[in-house]
Length: 116
Image (cartoon, rainbow, N blue to C red; front, side, top):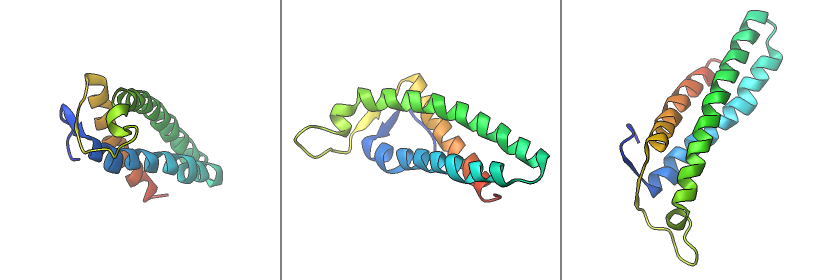
């Protein structure tokens, strides 16, 4: 999923978007947190703390809008009694912004993680 359009497939959501979000959460909760705790340089520690705060705020907005999307399309993503089909899901403006933000945050956090 390179750019965010007005739709996303349920397969892209489950196999691309959500794993990227989980990766971001893992990096923030493990690597960045450890870097903050283990940093001996006060400036570096402060820089990491600012990153953590910025990323956490962005993550909160993303999670709210993604939860809305998952709730709205729960009957398609996790249908009762049958296997889910790959379906195009229409995104509202907030969901579109959130999916774009996931991709951007994933790239920023991955880049940061490579330097920790």
